[in-house]
Image 1 (cartoon, rainbow, N blue to C red):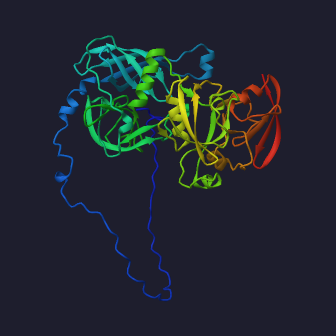
Image 2: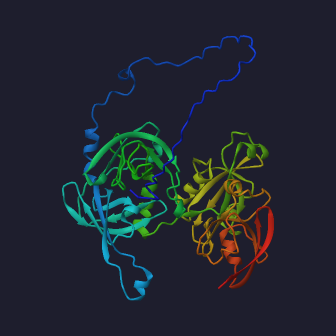
Image 3: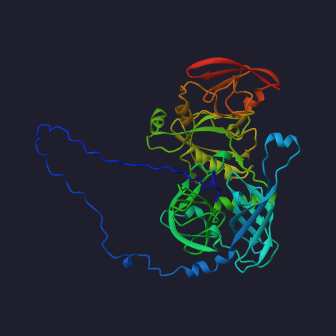
Length: 472
């Protein structure tokens, strides 16, 4: 498992303490009428009398798939750091081999294997060990840090391979099994249930990733990364990726990448070596109950509000979408959050036509959009200047940095210690203009910057200021 950013050893401990205080007795109040007893639904039949028969073993379901789950050994050469004074004298640190252990899943008889990006990241050499003790050197086909998916390949034929399920049909409570090589003890199967679906826990925030995890209480430990999450019929539903723990060990909170997402990434990596993601060209905000009321919609309406469209000739503009439209669905999928919209569009290939379902002035409409391609110029969040990370304002960032609703622009969310713009900008500052041009997204802001002297209109702690900064 990834030691820091992926294993996420979060020591989040909540304590509830009950306190009993001796307070003076209040005046005696009149007796309240007895509460009406609730009507309860009770099924007193034993478990064996329910619709599902008692299962005494899952061995048959797992027997066919276990040979397709393999161990992945990685190694990379690193050089020890030496003090600057010794480097000036020509000294070099000793080279050492770092070794890692993970798991993988054979998805085709000719040797394609899905695993995690963090299992193979920066590896100089990859070895694969099969259940029958055969060992192969693996070739890296491609990686996608934004989903933590990687594809490797070994040269072999007639290999055991898995059957893929439709992970979108998983339900909370479904029985699942985690298979991998935890802590190097050998192939191990653990059992649990689907604890939740569609989880976003911030594991991939550093790379602006796409999270849609299956959460499970099946035991997952270091070395399980890249292994299989299997349903009760022996089909692959996910790729084990991470745990939350305050001890680096399993506490019953594990996460797997849904196989629908992993397989779409896999196909793109095999076909092109990269991942091409769709781009709609909208900035959005979640539709809360209060906002729904302001837009003349029922309070329980779910969707996201288009707060801005960019660029001017982007897919959303061409499709006829407008600011203040409420997106409630894409194709056959309901959209209830900004993350759901970003995930669905990001999983869809560029040039794909999608049906965008909206509410405009309270009335439903459908618009057909042809998706563009995500590039460095049209990502919402990123580096505007070296060491200066910005993103469009949202409800969350407005609350975090106490920004007035009337302020528009890009908020500085991160400021590196070594950035040359440390004196010019502050974390929480909102950049509204650069060189007198309004900026609403990263692309327009970058285009407004010129070599040499620049001027920016910045809102910070309730005050507008003009900031001069130099770009070399």
